[in-house]
Image 1 (cartoon, one colour):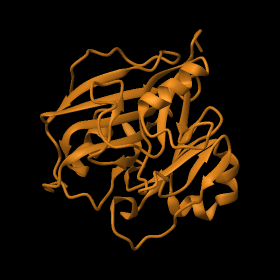
Image 2: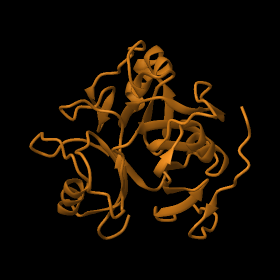
Image 3: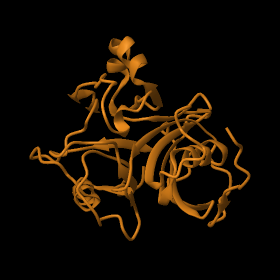
Image 4: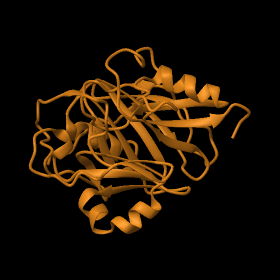
Length: 252
């Protein structure tokens, strides 16, 4: 695979991340693509997945999620849609909230769509730690992972595994769309990232690995993807689940 020679230039100069620093959205420019990234520390920040409201209805938008959190005395710092879903706004694969499995692990492989591009995987939030796990590995140790997962969402494909870009990604592909992902670096930091202009799988994975230093990354979705806060956050279709970084109104 060819090496990318263009370095990402931060539009907003960012000092090295310090533990305990509040999560915030930062902007990058990479090969004429604008990319937004929100970095959070699962040891100190509250990172959660959200799907339905108290009445059991899908929240569907950042506006409704934000209103629910404010009513609970919380503030949404950043958020993005959390994976591929069906027409009923149901996650297409595993979905866990507060330790309860609301949608089962989807181990199907031979089917159409990005979700089924192999390998796919699961973003897991445990107690003060986050993981990105290949679906087959999750299935092989389901008892362990079910006990570990406080929150989880399944999607696909995995973009980076142990520092290596998915071999199915073509460096010369012309298939470019808006894309979002969640990734982890070697220190365990979580980053929610979105390419706000069309980008290929390979170029997006290269940015996550080479510029954000992510060692593992999971693709979340394509053209419909949005990130909060942004001007277009509440424009577009309803979502299934969402991932958000939140804080209590009075602080952590």
